Image 1 (spheres, helix red, strand yellow):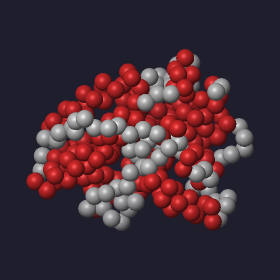
Image 2 (cartoon, rainbow, N blue to C red):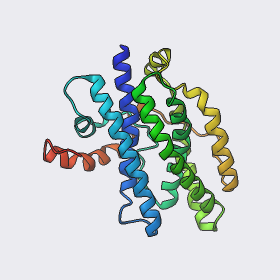
Image 3 (tube, helix red, strand yellow):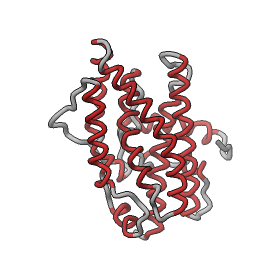
Length: 252
């Protein structure tokens, strides 16, 4: 693998993660538990879609094969996507969505804080803008995680179930492969091992305040770095890509 191929793959990974999670959150439009929360999730979704657009646009430029960000978003199949398994899970109930968002936002907060220092000026610029937005995402999701966990018996039970279901997909957030290794030598990518202790500390503190317990002896799932996903991604892509494949050439 060349450095150019590694950078292309890295940009796809970042773009795909935001694209898929943003699309999931947008599914709450018209279905939120209350108007303010529906608007909050829609605004977070818009932030993520904006970040996805920037990363995929840069990926297309790096690839230099005439494909656009639209082509990369809407004309690849599931084995060509590199988003994390955590991002592609269906929304479930509101507690499930909040726990998924909290685990992702806590990771993104520290990840983009480091990516701001990348030697690649384009990635550093996108990360600087994204970090400001993710600071709000993290505050919103962590506050709700605490409210639901330390709320009623029903809300506690629902968000604990969400944590039990989603925890096995968190180890993959810190998985590194050849792509990371090549780009780390050029000080382009983020050493995920360096941010894991910060993520664990923050997650433990919030979950403790929420009176939630991290499941133990959990088998950790992986696969997205190799383009292997859960069954959920195929259904999501079928819906997300339907319009573009039906009307080739439309732009987002």
